Length: 109
Length: 120
Image (tube, rainbow over all chains, first blue to last red):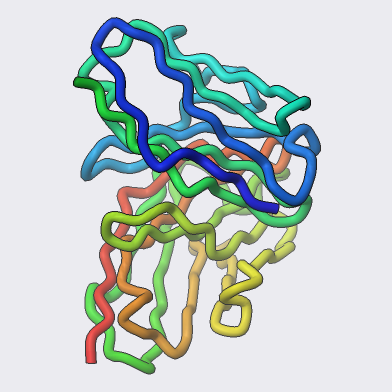
């Protein structure tokens, strides 16, 4: 089971961007999907867990969703800020072990 | 306050073994339905999960590295130790430990990471 993310996306401040995470080899609905943000030089921090939930302190500009028809999860960030310029990783399980996507570099310019 | 802190050598030679320690505070590594994982990130590259040990000593190892990895939980010291054998320059990376929850697979608390360089 693999999670495939676009290498990079870019968008302007104030706009909305969606980052996809496509499952390959199994149904993405079989296990929860998490999303992490990693700013340059920093530790990954949880943004979304259990597909759609936000940890305390994460702004509601960040939202997660699952689309079983495309076997993919998505992270949507609205009202983009320059501070959202970071790498974003999706993560799930293959039934036994954790699996991470290859990460998406979001450029806000 | 929950914290995880990695410690170990910053430089190892090719073919040597690497031993890293994750010291946990704010909760017990024996707390039910929790685990501690090791992950790494080579410079400029993606996160990679390496190993995981749950509260009940159930161990999981990355299939691609299984032959080189050992993970052990020390309940008395509240630590988790990772050993990786036969180190190679491609293993140069920042190594993280993180707490994970069995119920959903979330890595909710992360250490700051420790850089390891493998050189001949």
